[in-house]
Length: 227
Image 1 (tube, rainbow, N blue to C red):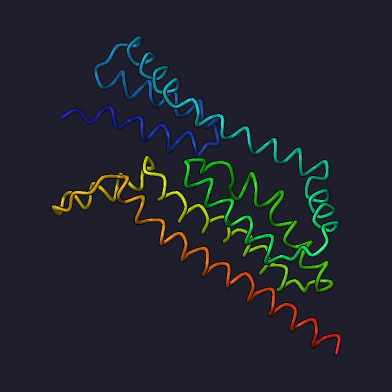
Image 2: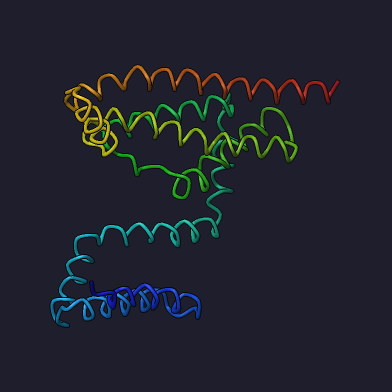
């Protein structure tokens, strides 16, 4: 057995330890592994190019991070707080419940990347929820603020987790189908998606109740402080 191709792993470890450019380290390790594995230089480069071309959409997601950073630097969170502050009757629970339904419905039709902690919760949903709670109950304590922000992130997770299984072409549905088939239970992805709907409805009701209970708890605390 030829163990020389494993030298590529050592190159990755050494390169990262010496803090060299990660992309360069991985590329060099890949080329070295291919050459030591008996391939010629051209097929190795072709394999790298094909892998990049097949998975180039992965690199696009990293564009979100600097874009969100620039938007936050120029006051995106402040604008979000100002916007929700001008809506009469807006509460933290109502706003997050509406976002929960939106997140589930969009995930159910396959748009699972339309929201998320980085691109939606941090710059928009969390500051709007905090502003709504502050507008209704007054200045929040640090503990209350953390609870509101945590609930905003949880709302996104719950909406995505229970909404995406309604979309029959999602990987989780195919995984469930494969596991059931291995045990002799044959179901189509559409059948599994239909049975995911009651679970999504229950998740909406349960998490929505948690939102309104948190709103009530914060309200009672501030009412007691004012008394």
